[in-house]
Amino acid sequence: MSLINNNQGNGNSNNNNPNLTKGHPLHTIKQENNQVMLVIKDLTALTNILKKQENDNFKQSILDIRDRLNMLTDLEKHFIRIEELIFPILIKHLEKDLPLKLTEKHNEIIDSINELISNFKSKTNKDNLDSDIEKLKTTIGFIESMIDFEENQLIDICLREITDGEWYIIHNQTPQFGFCLYDPEIAWAPEGFEPYEELIYDEDTIKLPTGSFRLTELLSLMNTLPCDFTFVDSNDKVKYFSNRKNRIFERTRVVLKRDVRNCHPPSSLEVVENILDDFKSGKQSKADFWINYEDKMIFIQYFAIRNDKEEYLGTLEVIQDITNIKKLEGEKHILTYD
Image (cartoon, rainbow, N blue to C red; front, side, top):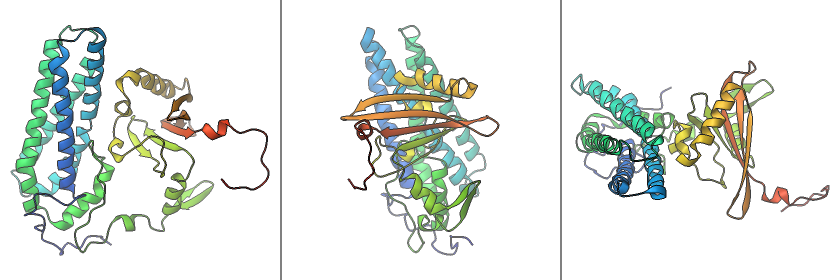
């Protein structure tokens, strides 16, 4: 049975409200655009001083530029959501070629960002710096033009043509595509619609070789384990992370669908690449690290996930606070509570 009553709402409830309700898909798009513009502002400032810098300052600015470019790769999720969720609805209201033209522009922007990442990754001096900066400025111009189109044309078309029921379908399908530099704080539903989050965890059973879970049980179990874990699939995309209350390092849904390389600072990229290469080749299956963080000892482990045929499925990151574990001595047999 459909969760959406297609006869309910006419799509005009938000048409006269420029400040869309938090959680509404268009509010999310606007917030994502705001975050992208902040990154662009940083990039512009960095490129303006890059030519004047020498040695260590130059190297740090290159790392900072790479970091901001990595952040801009999240635009791919922003664009794909528009292409997959909004264009199919709008296609009956728009000139036939517009979605195709916009998709081509989206692809050009992402290709340009990836090319810039490659260029600045290998940059250790000012050779070809002028051309790289010019390429960066051109790409920034493309992004700003696309944001201008979304803010001043596409959003108005969407508000005019898409019904509340259709927006609710878009909202419920959005998380599977991921978010761009912004994670909505609250769920959204049009007035009179039952929140989807209350229905998604039903009594369906996930059957496994050694038992089974209800969805609510499995979700609660993963968020109760005394560690934080993140799963990266075989295509190096972040696919899932646990979300217990006291996470050691903050994580938001913005990272979902993001290339794991873009979840780490450029200075650690070589280590990330080495782990992925060794896991995929079968050379290694585990990597351990430990750091001091806010007066705590943090144990970080990476595990290669393989099926029964030893085929690589992805990488699991497990992060645990072992401060109190390190203090254990002797034995404990008597029941006491902390």
